Length: 434
Image (cartoon, rainbow, N blue to C red; front, side, top):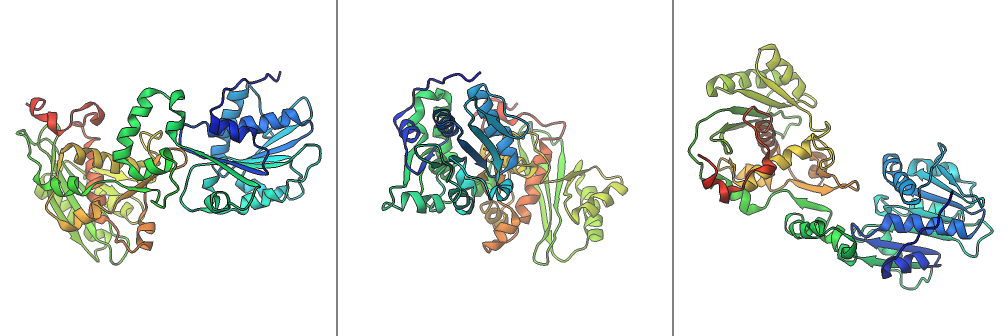
């Protein structure tokens, strides 16, 4: 049974809901109810005009199924059929499709369509395709609606914000704080930390800024990196030594060996680093065995993707305690990180931020650490900018940074590891470490 929804909309939400413009858009920060507003607008349209045909589009199928369709079912207590369609008693239909399915809809006539997270689309191609299909009879007007996050001077900015002459394109914008009354206070408080820790993300997704700041944030700040060799180590007993190996894949890349040693319950120190060019996997395996014997290494972690797998196999064949690291594997916290690589770099960040990892004085390592950037995916997960993208920007492969990153990650897998989130930062360590 279809039940009426009573919604007390905020001014910017109400203007979007009530608009009869040809192409209304709601571009606003996280937590501003964009998805609900889009679904509610299309639901109300289909109720008002019998025999309407509506289409809701999301770029990726997983996002459509796990987010958009689930939200629709929850908001309206409605069951979507196996054909990804919801049918009203008055003959109206709402179809749910992802980008790859759009091309088969060439002969369809729509009453209304909605694009969720429209900034996920690189250009206006999908919007234009659907725009050509707004020709179904039976309603007082037809609409193409979209919701989005601000994303610089992209196609949405160009067609809506930078198009004042067109009455067809209407846009309403809002920041997260415009909906603060409906959001948890601890969430609002946490935004203050985000402003410092992820300033670009904060500007784009919270303040809803169209400024061309870029979606990426630096993982580490210069003060943290350049202070890392000066960290004061508390007295303690060495427990574990971990060797991280980033195996070179290209001619200009380095195969890097980095060893860290546990100094006390919390702190670690980088005690060894060497970088070599032009070495094959047999040499790398043999040298890793030599280092592990000389330093008394407890475990070795190797970048196992590609040719690194041969080094992993070689170490296993020689009975060395090796941990294969696959950066594209699922994170232990899949709700936070896009993959294992992102998780590992944020473990490294946490250790450095807390003053729990003392680094060698190495300008190349410092520069590489300061080149690591991350971004938030549309699903809210953090992802590290890949090597290929860095090369396109003229940046060298951060081999030294990745070796220390893997070693730091392995330090949290050892028997001496602890829950970082539950422990004090460096300022509190004097009263914590005995």
